[in-house]
Length: 68
Image (cartoon, rainbow, N blue to C red):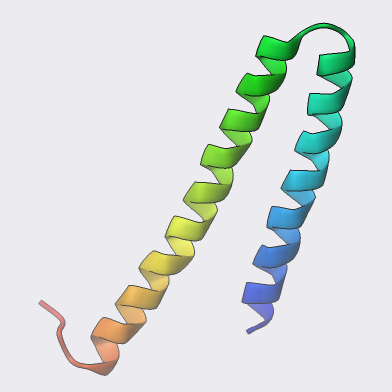
């Protein structure tokens, strides 16, 4: 359970940092780079969530004895 709360804070931290970087880059006129930073951060968060979902499915599989 503590790991799940830590993951939520990590995702929120990534969001805050990316929002700040995006704003600074947009103010500097580097809007295309700002969009790339946002896209890369989205992929990073998606990977973090996919890892947790994989762990969840592994635990469900072990509970119902569907191990291959």
